[in-house]
Image (cartoon, rainbow, N blue to C red):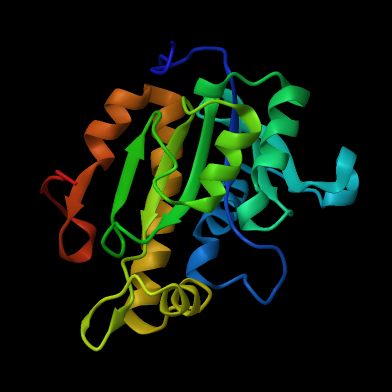
Length: 222
């Protein structure tokens, strides 16, 4: 299937961050994917052009080079739960294979600040991923999950939709803000590692428990 691209391979990658457009959502937990794309664009001098520049007005996007490969960075402007439209469009437009798609997004079921990389899988209840799977009819695209943890309600983790919605659409503060910002930078490191070294080597480095200060604390068995 070619899921493990080799270092130096002349490939084109589509790197998609999930989030919601507009300043109202910019600093929220749900926009961790957008923020990772912004950080990658800054690192690699990639100009993200607004949706009017691109056919169908589906995304902010830009092209450049990351770790020796051509990369298209994409922030869908269709809102989180309809991200598949933009992914399908750019895959077709740029002729990107599913195994060369990397989606960065926030994950409630990972501890705050933890990363988890996978080259394929189900949507796991994430509506953004579900939209992508429905749109392209495939599950063999890569994911970089950025842990935001579950909200606490009366001191215990909550699955209540209203509590969860308020949490993901709020901006973290204090230590939570610092942990998310640091995790976003490591998510950028992870994307670079996937493109440079392939999924297996990148997962070996980044799928580890994070100790205090971001240090590795052993294998992540989640």
